[in-house]
Every structure is written in structure tokens, then in C-alpha cells.
Amino acid sequence: MSTPPILELVKLRKAYKKLEVLRGIDLQVFPGEMVCVVGPSGSGKSSMLRCCNRLEQSSGGKVLVDGLDITRAEVDINSVRQKIGMVFQQFNLYPHLNVLRNVTLALRKMQGRSRNESDSMGMSALERVGLAEKAQAYPTELSGGQQQRVAIARAIVLQPKLMLFDEPTSALDPETVGEVLNVMKQLRETGMTMLVVTHEMDFARAAANRVVFMDAGAIIEQGIPNEVLGAPKHERTRAFLARYTGG
Image (cartoon, rainbow, N blue to C red; front, top):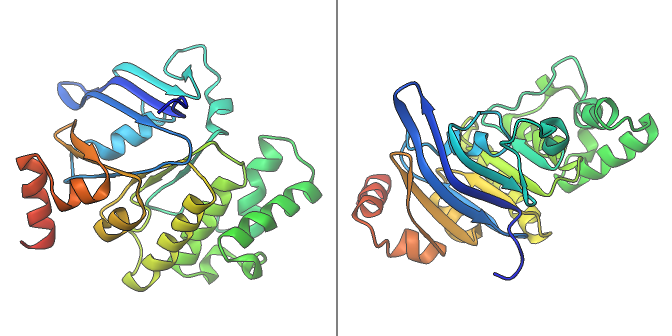
């Protein structure tokens, strides 16, 4: 692609003492792309994702966000994180704050925006995830799927250049998975750049521009969904998909 990547990982390594969980990852994510990362548990998917905004410190290599190497010690990581939204497995909402306050907290505390401006931006974000009517509700009054959609609204309200999703549906009841995946598809349609760790193979097949298969801390293969999930080249990918589909 002629457009430079929003996210670029160069020889990214991560080790916990003697356990190497990332073994020289090279990956680029371009503007407007949804890249889905799949693979067995323990393959390094979440560690890779958390290195992308320095929730985990890498052991070697580079992480470039919009051309800036964020692994350098002098980088203001709090400023960088405002460009990178992240949605976790758990919703991490503040139970004592209503939905709108949860969504607007970073706007007020980190960006110093007024309450009126924050509330306007927060309501717009809630509308994008289909929850404007729940603005005054509290997290305990919401389903898991609704709480995860609030977490997505909290991330997108900062207007990030890149969204990271770490197994965003793994803590949800089966009946609420679809509503979260639908919101993610809508974000993709608006041009949001997204790197998604997921076990939802049907979603990856239908929504991703590219699928990346990881195993044992390495990228084994990547390509368009029909290639990686439909006709994988590598034996390890075929074995994983066979276990996943019961084939």
C-alpha cells in the first residue's frame, strides 16, 4: 500500500524471564483496515496487543504508531494512548458512575474539556453504539453486551486513530455477542482502523480485511479471510482450524 501504516510492529519481542511469548513479530495495519488476529490460547495474541499501547513493555523491536516509535523512553505514552482506543475482555466500567459519566471521564480529566462539550461528545458516542437511551443508567443495570458497548463508546469518544480489541466478546453470554460484533462492523464501515484479537471465526471471515494466524509467539500466516480461514497454507493453521471447527 502507498499509504503509510497507522500501526507497525518491527521485530517485536516480549519475554517473561526465560519465557519468550513474542518472537520477532512484524505486522502492519493500514488506515481503515480491520485486522483480526486468531490462534490458540497462549500464542501471544494478547501480549502483542498490549505492547501496541505499552500496557506491556516489549523486550525488543519497535512499535510505531503514526510513524512514532512508542517504545522509546522519552515518548509521552499518555498522549499516545489518546490516539489508541482499547476494549478489553472485561468492561472495566466504574460502577458508581452512570453510563454518560463513564464515557466522558477521560474527556474531562485528560483533555480538560467542559462538561457541556464532554456530554455532547459522549452522547454522540453512545448513539454510535446504540445506547443513547441508557446515558443515565448505571453499569449494574445493563447486560454484559450493553456494558461492552459502553466500553466501546468510552474508547471512540476520544476519536482515536486506532482501536484495539482484546477478545471483546469472550466474557459475554451468547445472546449478547452479536450486538457487540454488529457495533464493531459499523465502526469498520465508518473507516475506523481496528486490530482485533478474537475467537469468533465467522466474524473474522465476514468482517476482516485481513486475518493473522499466530502460534507460539509468531505470525504463521496472514492474508484475506477466505485464504487463511478457508484454504490455509500452513499445517499449524490447518490443525488449529480443524480443532476449532471439530473437523
